[in-house]
Image (cartoon, rainbow, N blue to C red; front, side, top):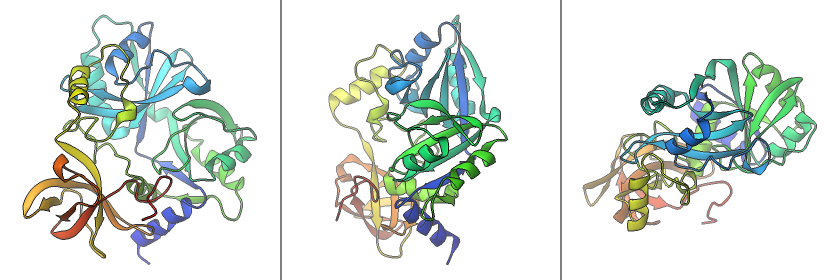
Length: 337
C-alpha cells in the first residue's frame, strides 16, 4: 500500500473514531495593550468586541482583509485574560504582521509572536470529545470556536473547539517541549478503537473531504471571503473594519465572479493543484487542492466561474472528466448520494 493510500485509510478511520495530530504549520500571535479591542475590531471581519474569557463567547473565526477586501489571512481569535490570541497558519504570519503594523498609528497595541513558545496538537473525530474528557478528567462542553484551559498529563493546555476535518475537533496549544507528553496522555486515555496517531497528510485529506479552505491553497490575497464561502468569518452587524466596503457591496449585489467548489474526478484520475478547469475547451477555473479519498474517490477543490459552480456541472480538470460535487464529500453533512 502506498503512503497516500495509507493516509487515506487513516482518514477514514479518524471519521469513525478520533485522531491525534501534531501540527507543524500553525502559529500564534498575541495582541495586547489598552486599545487592543477597538483596534483589532477595526482590523478583522468578525466582531471581537463581545468576546469574553471563558464560556460561549471566548473565541471566533475571522479574516484580516486588505482595503480591497482580499484575504491577508484567516485566523481564530481566542480571548486570554488581557490579550487576544490569533491562531493562524505559520506561512501567513510575516505578511499578517506587516499588514497589522502598517495600520498601527498611535494605538496602544502590542504584537508578539508566540509561535516558538507553543507546541500544536489537534484531536479530531466523532469520539474526540469523549477522548479528551477522559484525558483531562473533566467535561469538554466548549461552544464552537471557543476556548478554555485544562490539564492533561500534568500540563496546562489551552483547548479551542474548531478543526479541519468537519468532525468534532479540538485544537490544543501546549507549552513548547510538552507536546509529546500531552499527546501520550491523550493516547493512553483511549481504547482499542481510538485514538489513532496520524500525520498532517491525513489531516489534509480530511480537510479536502470536508471542503474547508486552507491558507496558501484556497486562501490568499487574490481571494474574497465570499468566493471562499467564508460567511461565518464575517459579521454583518459590526462597525467599520478594513475591507468592509467591498464585502458589503458584494453581499448587496448577491453574486461573485468565482466560487470555491468540490470536484469529483473520473475514476483513477487526479488533478494536481494548479491544473486548469475547463468547460467546452474554455478555461473557467483552477484546481487548488486534491487527494485520493478512501470514502469519496479522487476529489479536488478549486475555484470556477460562478456560472459553472452549480452541483452536477460537467467539466474537465487537468484534461480529465469531472463534475462539481456537493460539499462536504465525507463526514457530517455529506450527501448520501
